[in-house]
Image (tube, rainbow over the protein chains, first blue to last red):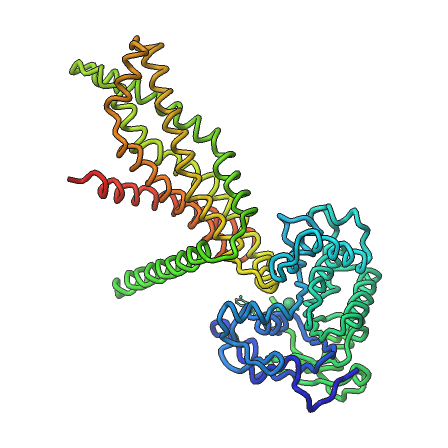
Length: 262
Length: 257
Ligand SMILES: Nc1ncnc2c1ncn2[C@@H]1O[C@H](COP(=O)(O)OP(=O)(O)OP(=O)(O)O)[C@@H](O)[C@H]1O
Ligand SMILES: [Mg+2]
């Protein structure tokens, strides 16, 4: 379901540069995500995938380059304008990031109550509906996040990310730390939820099974740049030795893991 | 071997930190007065700071009042000024000991808790999650705590003053043989409203300092459990020091002739 190429992309990152001290993390990264498209960014640990997402979300500011959402530049916006842009976003954090001072249903309803100004009773009904969408029983809604298993926390995080029916959803490693069955359940949920909402999604993962399942298009991040991108069906015939090494998980190849022998 | 280099570096670091703290305070205070405000969160913090600190502050001031009566009685006996005990107790309590002791106790109890809670939210990305859910963390986390600190500490100190004076009364009447009616009369007679008011102003400032340091250090903590621990320590230490410094400045403002 790749959208028309000549329309304005939903997300456009151009020439992003981000460094921490001497360490260059993003080094001229370009990435477009079309309306309704699901793009997955793959890449080794520490290559800057989370930094890319945080830059788009406005949690970090790149030194150079531009990011546009629906054609509107978003770097350096005032707090108020940033809040308006963020209303279009839903985000599933790598570690869940559920608010542990709030009950599960209040977590899911948070964006509705605080951001959207829905009244509590209505937000609560929506929260319970989303809880059911991610396959959790209603009694979970009254629990505290600390009482949930890792997989359940991921699902609640997913419910929170989709509760405000956002136009753009970000998933930061939705399946890491889960058993293969639960990972597949989460993948199915992501596909189902995003197809139903018609949302544009940008996901990060190093789990190839997950990438194949949820992506329309896959992009590989290496050395601060996107070194290859293409439809999911072409990932096995990319002709790119970096991609081949990554998807087959080989230690030998052009990618040198920064592991120093003692 | 240039000794000015590390000194200059430390000085610049200090200026930078002071600037960041000021900016943090200004942003947070501006969110205290701009809608939307969160009554539910403010209420929760008020209960946490005001109600749950009562036992600690009550005990501290009770025993301080008792010690004060005992010490001044034995001290003043040297120049037969024992009758000044009620005045000394009420003056020291309302002007100094009430606000300072309550401030320091609350710094240990509340400042630490705030830094730990907000610090944990920082390192587990909950603060990032707040931002992406279009909620300003200054407004949602910091402002309610500042408002609660500013308003609840004076109330706590008022209660603490009364308990402290009562502690002095207990010792004076049951141990030192003062006449109860005369003790109370003397307490009232020499107390001026400025004594109490200056103490309450101090309390409000201290409450603000405690909440601000707790939030600031929590908000800027990094690097997991160790970072949160460091933030907690820094919050308590810096709040205590700032309380003692500002205590001097406010006293100077009210009473210097
Ligand atoms: N706040 C920060 N301060 C300093 N360095 C940082 C910060 N955030 C990230 N980095 C550095 O940027 C690099 C990329 O980090 P990032 O979290 O984006 O990796 P990632 O690709 O998401 O890895 P993983 O798959 O393990 O999550 C890392 O080398 C990290 O050390
Ligand atoms: Mg990451």
